[in-house]
Length: 120
Image 1 (cartoon, rainbow, N blue to C red):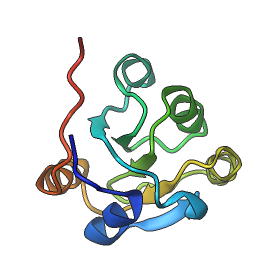
Image 2 (image 1 turned 60 degrees about the vertical axis):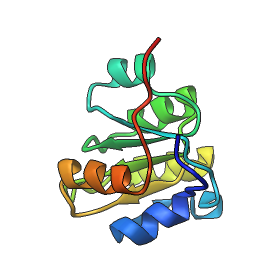
Image 3 (image 1 turned 90 degrees about the vertical axis):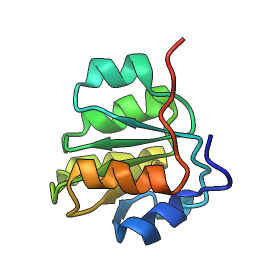
Image 4 (image 1 turned 180 degrees about the vertical axis):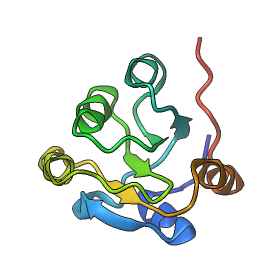
């Protein structure tokens, strides 16, 4: 489990842009999850996770809300659709974007002390 990592720490470390949810950057991050398959995220992500994806449609916000993630990082320079940004703001979910590829994002999160959630 990460020790005291907040979404704002991820924004700084990954040089992310905050597309939505700027009022929720103090959300604590417990674990990390990475997948682009929404059904996989619904089955495996959980409250307090930072979720790394390249998906940009508004369904990512619905899945993020359902699982209780602390933030969604859209990697690889993908740009969330305007309705996705609006929905993330409405749901209070930080939606971060970065040009860094997913592999690098995950490595940097690991170096910050964030580990993957182990399924039981």
